[in-house]
Picture 1 (tube, rainbow, N blue to C red):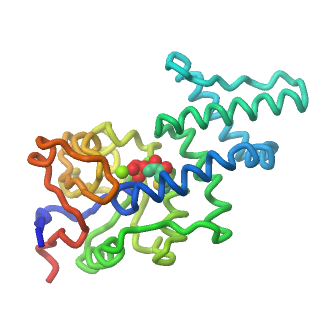
Picture 2: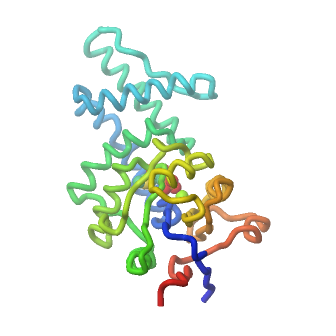
Picture 3: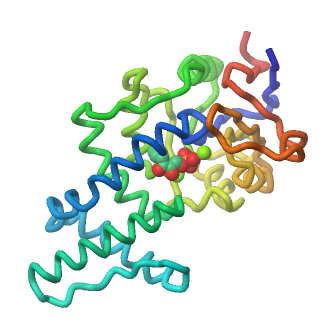
Amino acid sequence: MVVLSVPAEVTVILLDIEGTTTPISFVKDILFPYIKENVKEYLQTHWEEEECQQDVSLLRKQAEEDAHLEGAVPIPAASGNGVADMQQMIQAVVDNVCWQMSLDRKTTALKQLQGHMWRAAFTAGRMKAEFFADVVPAVRKWREAGMKVYIYSSGSVEAQKLLFGHSTEGDILELVDGHFDTKIGHKVESESYRKIASSIGCSTNNILFLTDVTVEASAAEEADVHVAVVVRPGNAGLTDDEKTYYSLITSFSELYLPSST
Ligand SMILES: CSCCC(=O)C(=O)COP(=O)(O)O
Ligand SMILES: [Mg+2]
């Protein structure tokens, strides 16, 4: 088995979700279709609620920023024209969400709404999050060895907690010391990793970030974070240069902690 030695200065392991802890197929074939199939009904049911209105406001603000993009879908403000007005706005939000999802956008606005929509499915037991078999045993071992384990995903913190709280492995939320999402910054920006280190209270070089996406690995590395690229079934392929440049693992069990036995 290939073994990757974790540098002695590392005290925090920061994990991506999609393509790292969890198969991309679970996100693409289960989580995302749930949103597309249910968004209209969800908006119609929850429209009057404060949380839903906040989600719509955030999406509208994002739509204004996206106005220059090809195919962007604007979300009109209420004009006070009753039910017809509401149905028109709901349709615009549905079209905007579907447009953003067709591009796999990682905007905070989209991720916030998605998290709220998944809540009902997870808490009712209609959905259970999938984790690769090596994830839970490895995380337990790291924590026993004194490592802190944090999550950094584009999925909202609320959605992350739903996944860890309702997984095929049971409720594994207690295995995580904390969560970060795009509210701290985007995963392709190195400043996000500096902010994460500062929020945890450590130096960037105390962190090892595991991700399947090399642009994220590159941004983290620029901030002096240690990185390893995770190669999982269904992940996007890597170029020969990427395969040579990055430390690669295919399972969390390939990480060797000098402090553990
Ligand atoms: C709570 S993760 C749900 C999946 C998701 O919405 C997503 O964007 C995953 O992105 P990641 O940064 O984990 O690759
Ligand atoms: Mg990922």
